[in-house]
Image (cartoon, rainbow, N blue to C red):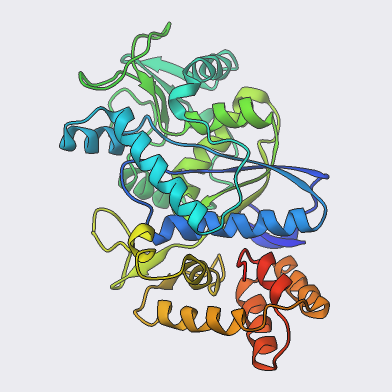
Length: 371
C-alpha cells in the first residue's frame, strides 16, 4: 500500500505490522457534524477497511476535545454546562457516523478523562528541559526542539500567521518566543480548573492528543491523521512535545485530508457556510452521502454543489441493481485503494462495471457502501 506522507511530502510505502496503531483527531463537540468533518473520518474509515481486508487488525483511537475554548464559548452562549453540550453533540456525531456506515473505532477518549495523564506528560517535558513556567502557565520551548517545523515544512512567517489565526496567542508576554505554545494555563472564572504543582488551570489544546495517544497506543503510532488545517499548529506541536517527552519517534506516517468549500470559502462555523450531515440524512440515503464524499480524492480540496447529491443518488441506484459478486472488479478496487487511497478511481471502476451489467457487490462493500 502506498500513501502520501505529509512529513516526507511524497507518496511512500505504508508497511505497518499486522496490528496497526492509528490515531485520528476527533471533534470538538459544540455543534453538528458538517460535511468537512464527515469527509475526514470517512477517508480514515476507507483506509481501515482496506487494512482489514489486507489482513491487518486496526486499533484506531479518535479523541473528543471536550476541554477547549470553542466548546466553553458555545456553552456560555447557550447557558448550559459545557459537558452537557459536549455529550449531546458527541451523541449526534456518533449517530451520523453510524448512518454513514463508519466502522466503530477502538476508543473515543475525552480530553477531560486525561487530566492525570496530561499532568504527568507535562512533568516529563519539563524534566527533559523542553518547557518552562511563566505567569502561571507552562510553555513548550520551541527553541529547544531543533526539528520544529519539519512536519508542516512552513516558513517561520507562515507558522506565525497560522498560529495567530488558530489560537496561538503569539503576543502572550509570558512567552520567550512567539511560537512557543501552552501546555497548561490558568482557567477563566467560569471554566473547569484542576490543581497542579504549577497552579490551578486547564490543559492547552495540543497536549491532550499527545497524552491520550501515549496512554491508548504507546510511544510510536503507525499513522496519525486529521484535516489539513491541523497540520499547523496542532500536529506540529503535538509531534514536538511527544518526542520531547519520550525521546522516541511519535508517528511513522502522517496523513491529512483536504478541506471542503461552499460558496467559494472553506466550510467553517464562523462563516456559516456549512452542510450538516444530519440535515442531509433527512432527504438523502446515507449511502449517497458517503458516495458523494468518496467520489473525491482525500487529498484534493473540493467544492459543494447542488448536483452532488442527485448524482450520487443515481449512482447508488445503478449500483444497487447489480448487487452480485465480481472477484475481478474487487481486485481492481483493491489496487486503486492501495494507490494512495484512490477512491475516485475505484468508483470509476464500479460505475463502469455497473454500466456493463456486471456485479459490484463486494467492491462497493470495500468502500463501505452496502447494497
